[in-house]
Length: 393
Image (cartoon, rainbow, N blue to C red):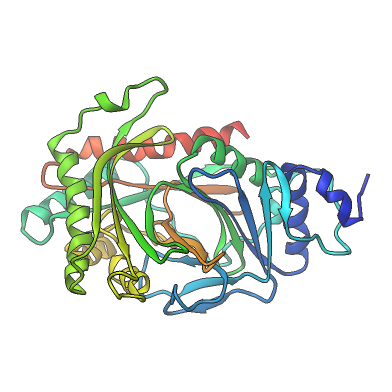
């Protein structure tokens, strides 16, 4: 049975409403971004009705309300979704936003076949262990030459999906599996369709004008019941995370900012993994630096956690050696000037939908003390939770 009156949609759950809302707006030629912030139960669906815009620069302090999706490659343009319509779900029900007059509830799910895919050919990395461990060995040799302190080689893996792959259910499962992550589901003709759960904040500006960023690195397996305080980190993992901290502090030094608060490192859980995390916070009013967030965004991306140090040398090495285009993986995404706040996250733990398959992505931080086989195992571990979710839906 179809329900046409908007008032009746208030009685439906978000799981019943979301597939129909997204399908309706896609049929109208719109693009969308659906997300849930870390440690929150609210979900927001932003609809861009007039087409996304490609932009070179992003001003977090002056931008209109929207959602941004940026590739890893800084030369490529960012994609901006203007917030023409926004729906907010609280406690499983629609709390803000009105459904269109001609909106109808569809029976069934939102499957992958109904979503935009990238029109051009998408590159897939060579995923076998031998290729990746050789890439890690070459990374170590480059580090030993003195050209870099750290390099983050990545890989992708293509997996088959059924034609009725339920994308909304994947999003909801990620919300349950990764309560501390930024969970997103973004789709447009320009970007294709991506779903993910990122543990890594890149830049945040809240309604009190406080800027935040984090240094997140080091990876170990997490299992239910483990005592987080008893997890022991190796010297290699501690140094890898410290490099990210030093990179952030070096960015502060470039702009002569001395007044910042540093908290950490501490161990945090992200799905089936644990990482070392240090938080940095700045009061932009007290420091008289109102444009700090936009300035730091340009300095931070791509961070040493997803590229390496020094940045230029690591970028050049990866461009020559990695062998594929990361596209939006390890770029950044998030809401901009939404309720007077902006929160951008590194696009990690994500899948990219193709016509009859999906791409999973993962990388590992390589230092002079790295072991190639262990780094490959880390990428497998990072893909593991997403792979289980894909197969279960």
